[in-house]
Length: 272
Ligand SMILES: [Cu+2]
Image (cartoon, rainbow, N blue to C red; front, side, top):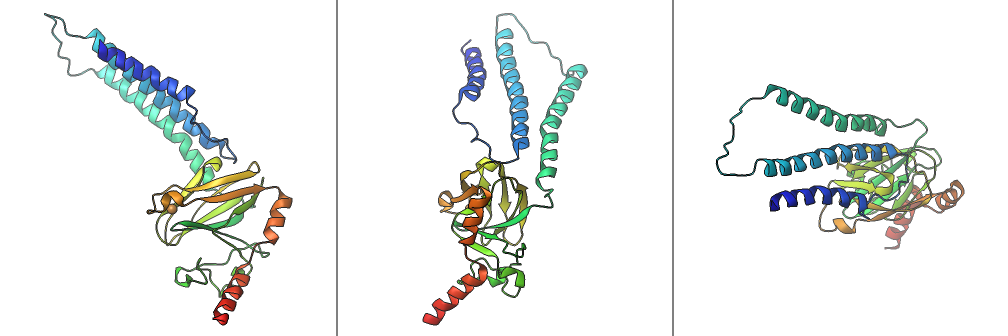
C-alpha cells in the first residue's frame, strides 16, 4: 500500500508543483507567443499522459496485489488494446510535433522589411554589427580576423566601411521593428539566447545561422549563451536594450563605424 500512496503523491505533487511553482517564463518581449503556445500544448499532453500512467500503475499495484491462492492469467496478445495504444500514442506525438513545424517555418521565413543585425560569439564575449547608412552589412572572412579586426570584417568590401561595430557592449534595437539576427561564431559553438524573446539558435563556426523576431516592448534584457562553450560559459553574458525609435537613433549616432575602428587601430600602431 505504501507504493500506491507514493505513486499518487508523485502524480498529484507534480501537477501542483507546475501549477504553484514561482519558476515560470519571464514575461514575453517578442512576437513569438506561438512558441509559448507550442510548449503549453506539449506540457498538457505530456502532463495528462504522465498522470494517467502513474495513476494506472498505482491502480494496478492495488488491484492486482498478492493474495493467497490468486493466480495471474497469461494473455500474450490483445489486438484491440494494442490498436488503441498505438493510435492514441501516434495522435499525441503528432499533436506535439505539428505545432513546432509551423513555428519553425515562421521562425526562418524572414519578413522583407527586417533589418539585419549580426551577432558574433567568441569565448566568452558577445559582439554585434549593424548596417551603416547604406543599410547593408559588409561581408566577413575568418581569414581577416586579427587583433585590430577581431570580427574578421572584409576591408575590401565597400559595404563594410560604414558598418556599426559594438565589441563586447550593449546591443540596442528599436521596438516594433522586425530584425533578422545573423549568428556567427569565431571559435566554438555558442548559442545566442534572450529568454524574453523566446528565440535562440546555435552559432556554428564557419557558417551563418539566422532567425528573426520583433521586439514588442522596451526594456533591458540579458543575453545568455545556451551552449556549453568552455570554462567561461556561465560568464558569457550580454545586454540587449529595446528602445523607442528616438532613443535608438540617439544611441546609434554614438557608435563607431568599422572604418573609424580601423583608423583608431592604425593610430595606435603608428604611435608605437
Ligand atoms: Cu558561449
